[in-house]
Image: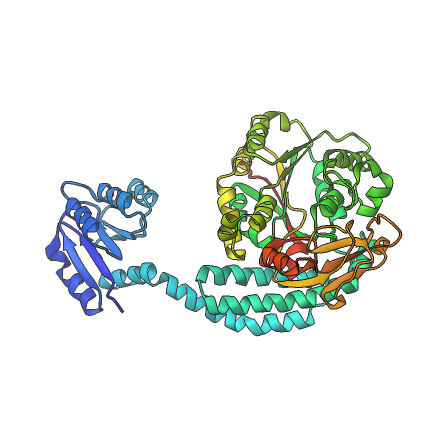
Length: 521
């Protein structure tokens, strides 16, 4: 194992001799310089693992040296050593991204602790997280086998995501693989649970034994805000999984006060046409097709399937509120759409409800299937989470919520369904009018492997419309994806490992909804 290389810059080198000897006895390699310029030159000549930098040196100050080193070696950890405890200095140092700071006189034990924190931080986190997950593994295993109600499934899923993100940060490949296997086991049991209870839920959506579903979401989670004086902004980020939400949630927590954090269950199919229309209409797909046929298109019909979201929202609000609710609807598909919405910011504040749909994550999952570059950028769930975070940090959505944080408003963040990374092909047969989604099929005379799908023989049992009397639906279980026998291998290779939605999985069905209000000034 190579020695950790330290560069120590201090104009009082005589006082460092005992520290340097102590560090070298501990197995570290230490070089010393007496001024900032020499430190900069050394960094350009050699590689170091960490730098100790005196704040007060003749010539270039410690902060000036720090900034110059960061310009050339931005990821190099720097520890500032100072006699000065003034707040302004500390703020400048922290703002310059120091790894730590020490106050003189410095004790050898302090130096060792700082080095462990900086150099061994990753290893210690990995060891601690791995040990903690190993202790939790058996509890999770027992929970997967014994969970019975939907609330328990939500809590179990949250725990699985918690450990997935912890192991992700710990960079423990072996434990992460075990975690993935445990999540697969959970999805096997979750599918059994959904198949057993789904028809009861969909027929009795307001019962206490039924979770919040897509078409009861507004009634349960949005209506209470509409009777308040302040405007409510309802953000629907299409295709946002719970794990992706946990990546961007800290930005909301920082600038808003949380009012409610919950999840709901997307209806089947977990696809935009069904789940989002259900959310905005406050009705099941079957109800929409019967009561508002002008706003519904079946899978085998030509034309867009989500072209009337504003009208569905208006219908739902007019049906459930005696007084008219002033509302707006916006769908953000491009950067220009987002910029125009931000420009219209002040007008939005005059509405009781503003519904804003962001389609970017859904576009990532679709383009990832078709474009080699996107396959590389979102090759697995970890990369997909990272890409989601990168988008959000640079999005006009973040700009908009920062503006909203300065006003007295409520905001609700949610989605219509999640997505799952498919792995196992399941062969099926259907006629040319059968729907094209590879996580579900709607059509007549469907042929399939019954062990790999949930077959809904009578669509009305699941509150789904049918194009003709012999139409039925099948939903892919777990990580299966539905492929026709024609050009089978070609399509298997094309879709394998892609992110899809429409079927039954924890990732697709259990999705987040969180409400915030502006922080009290």
